Image (cartoon, rainbow, N blue to C red):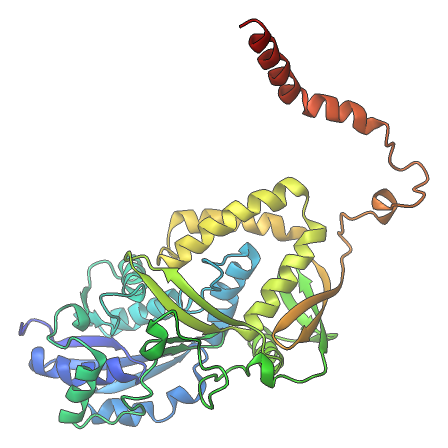
Length: 411
């Protein structure tokens, strides 16, 4: 497997089990190569602590830590929020982080004149596709190395064996070795007991949840908050204007404290298998609910219904790693037009894992209390008009029934 033509490799580095093991593995299998580690900060928090020391200790020549949080929220999360994109109820927390990181990774590789880009995604997952399709867009000629597809390691236990043999420090143990992915939008949990869908997630076990509490542990008193949107983008909470990263972080705190945003699903991966995942997305769940409520009164019926079709396709593109494609850009253009009137305020009630709508207002509201009223409407709606409408709308049904009856009588 040794390839002496590769002299410089840029590695997508998180400091987790996979990428920690990969550095010494690359040094063994690509003799004399320089490994440059790149960590994209999309909101992992303390996971980035001590990374430079660890990366260099295991063989990397240097580490780039790139602050991508603002870029991630504004250029990846918010477009998905405006589109209402969710994949089988999953709010795409890992999916839209990967193209953000991959873009930065490709830029570093080109600037460093690297021969290859390496990632630690497994051959069973979606992330390998997301990283590689994005890299192909920005650096189509560069070689991609995916150790999980070529090395002899077959399991996470064997990875730990390799790490221990090569004196790679790890923050995990075999017993707590959930596969996790954390960023400013969500935290995912996979593996161990979660691989059996019959097992209930251990929400109340200390240390399992990191962004949230279980609904049972949430306060007995509800929390109210009001989110202000401008053209589909959240800009303020309870009257306080916030920039994007601050706003999402604040909603994570409030939502997490109220047990909001826990999701347990068996999803259909792009590679063909079904996979069980447990997700924490407190702030994101709040934003999606608020945005949907605002669209409820600001979009006309046909646009609202058609946008649901677009939302599903948009989510599939993101989940399948096709962010940097003409179709995604074209769908963005459609979505942006729909969002021109999605401005206003949404009041929500958070209580023990539940979100209830407590009021919605917009200067562009299409709701008319006068027309919709069960009381006196002052002639705003002529109920006699509905008779003719029903006759025309139901004409195909009536004609078919009459002709069927005629054919039956003629038999």
